[in-house]
Length: 531
Image 1 (cartoon, rainbow, N blue to C red):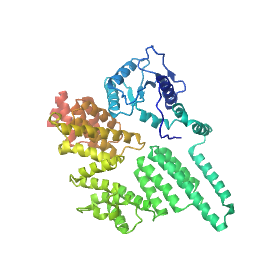
Image 2: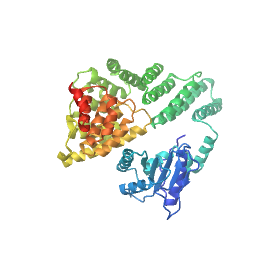
Image 3: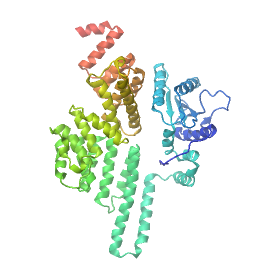
Image 4: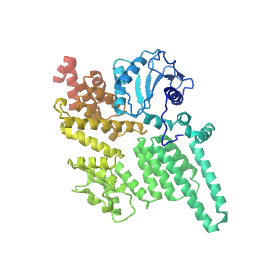
């Protein structure tokens, strides 16, 4: 069960921080025998804590705690020094984590990723990870017993929650018991009402309770717990199948099931549930938008546009419908201004303007760049706006040729590339942490992130993300070609040779193979190519 807190105080001394981290990592690693190492003055080999993951002694994990005061930051020298010390421990570690009270720092995490790759290239597999304070507090929500150590004010509520967990009550059972308790309270409260009033009051109260339960499971889905949320929604649907609930409740449950499947990568199952959900509440604004989204996923552009035409004059449609309409217009319309398809009152909605930026980009006009930057400023929490703004900066420098000489960059261009790579890196980390299957948009994001570092001439960092992208199953040929080209440019010939067999024959693939043969002096291969 994940719990949330608005603010957790930072520890004031190293001993407290180390003790708190020991409790957290004991829970994370599932290692009740995790140990704190040594005493002050002893050689701790860059470690404060050591344990094993999943009760497997071959999966040894080392943790170093770094208490930082005020705005002090962790430095690359500190990370490298502790990491190199930890490399000497026997039996060897497979993971090394630095846990710090300093704020999250993307550059330091990238440096840790680079250390990981350096060791991998040297023949050793060990992961180096840096946890900033923001990441630690996010993680505490998953481990209530650790949250108790970090935050005394969590106190009575936390202990009551732990007592509930210890009894083995899972979320589905708890939800059922809450429903029954709510019904008992409702029945008691309505004894003074007339029979007709009682029926209405019971129905409304049950609906209100189910809405709250659905909201809780939906938030788990948004928070990245896709599989957990899906199981909860399915259990709830099974629980109410014999009850008298409104079509609106059935729509909400089934629509959320559809979105869970979609984010887990099962697009067809997601489409099925979204369309089935619509039938329970065809006049609900969100149901109308979801139906259009299902048709968008199916590639039925005309059906999406028809839904827009049907609801252009009404007030029933959700604003997200118009985002879907503009996206469909990219493929099925030759309008100069797709906003003509959108009712005037919805033309300034963020979702609509993001779809418009994508429309303009697909049509090859630079108008999308100014709009994307404006949206990123107006809505800094909107991930797609941040991505499009970063990609606008990247496109300003790289343009269509996909390559730029780093030595020829102006200061302004270099600043754009650095900001672009920083933003795209943050978004890539968010996508990986989201809990769903990485989709084509996520993979394209990582491809642009690699390109931003290549354009700066920073091939070592580019290769960190190349390795990450290669771990994604079922990469398309276009992504594999870009990965192989980045590896060739970086001089990482083993990665090129590893990637080429995964790419279907094509002129671009053949050109890379010839370049690789020239590099290796494989004259037999080159001679065979001539024949």
